[in-house]
Length: 284
Length: 284
DNA sequence: CCGCGTTACGTAGTGCGTAACCATT
DNA sequence: AATGGTTACGCACTACGTAACGCGG
Image 1 (cartoon, chains in turn brown, green, orange, blue):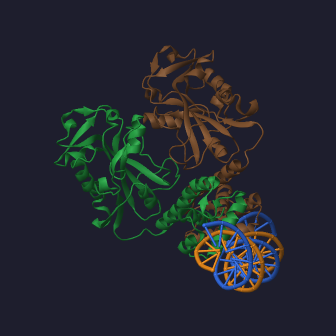
Image 2 (cartoon, each protein chain N blue to C red):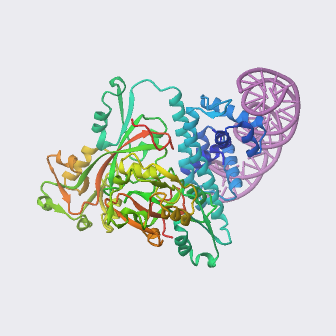
Image 3 (cartoon, rainbow over the protein chains, first blue to last red):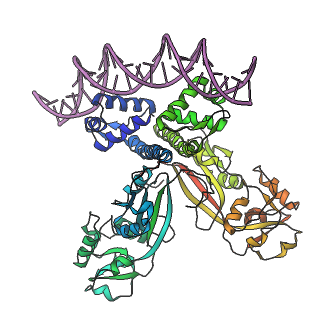
């Protein structure tokens, strides 16, 4: 189970093509074929169906292992390299859209003030911090009050809770429910919703947290632009669950608190970190 | 960063000797030397001091990455192998000492009733479940009421909370404090304690949870035998924090509740699991 | 000078590319 | 017939063992 083979496997599985993977990896198609054959022989399982190319059940299983392994390998190399020669240049900070301002504030004065801000996707940020593409990450999301943010294995990263804020249902000022003091989330299962999983609370999460079906998307908002989403909600295309502060700042929107706040907006600081370090890690 | 090299490195670091590592790995000493040299060349950092052999700072850092990586590689292979050909034979269940009975109860009727119980250390159990040395693990420990059990990265394992129970301070029936209805943990910092980290709440954890210094060990109890520990406590050598049920069952001991229960006894079921599987994993 | 890690060198094995091959659409 | 994965083959590189070497205690 050479990492090279694993990497080839993940690329083939992602691109669903041996030749495309070969191109991406700088191998010949033949080499890729040999990689997959070697892996399959080693594990004694067929990992990919061919024609069309698609991972088998075992292959899907392996993907779940391969990605964290490759991430950790990359992270280890990045970490040791940084340790050997700390890079100069501006501090590279990544942030998800809702917290870019907070990220800028937080990074103020870091490394003589020079700063590069990278706006990223929620899922990408941990990977980029782990592999030293970024020096620091600020990530937001929605979770039950004492839970960490959802998401798969983040890799060897230190997570510090930076802040927690109540969430509200964002409604156009003219909406019939806009005058209410609080709303039960479950009662809104049949309302019109905007699903903006990169900015607001993803509808899948609302379904999970209420246990209710419903929360069907009237509009799917795939971008990460906050202002755009607020405009869509303000125009009455549907509701969204957002942090209270964001909604308050918009003139055409009203944020109504949840009757049972089973969801909060949470901000986490991600730092590259030794995977295991001794328990008594020194403060930073 | 070939896993073979990483493995060699971890063994050398553990044994603090190239030749001993070579013996354990079935290589020649020369090969081990070459492995380390290759790793150091690849990463551009010295990983080990020689004479005496000891990991450098970078080496220690790397160890923190290497172990999870190797664990995940082993787990992946074990998982795919099991998936290809589920092993016959008795169900192999591992359990930490305080929960062996619970483990037996839980495994009843599993795989036509045949059952092998392995009593393990708290730290070892996750590794053995991940690598398919065990089919199931039941692990206990102490934690703040809503926290998971402490411990490093467990590897690709599914954790299910099995139960939570209050803890008590175990005292000999004749102890002056035995009549109290509740005790403040911090007030006991200067008492005599038995540190039995494999059975009771480790004193380091009591220190962490109270923020107090103290909790010095009058006796260090390194075994994992519960009855033995209870006897030591009953004989008046020192106090220990234990689950209420265990103390209640012993005639010579009294368990006194904590005034501020910042610590509970928690039991977790560990199952081998696809590291990542799609969120909507089918129930099992 | 002995124990132990390093370096030199030869060989067996393997990883990759080229190219011929074959299967599915 | 074309697209795309497999197999055959050869070369170059690597990984290991043997053995000579050197450094520190």
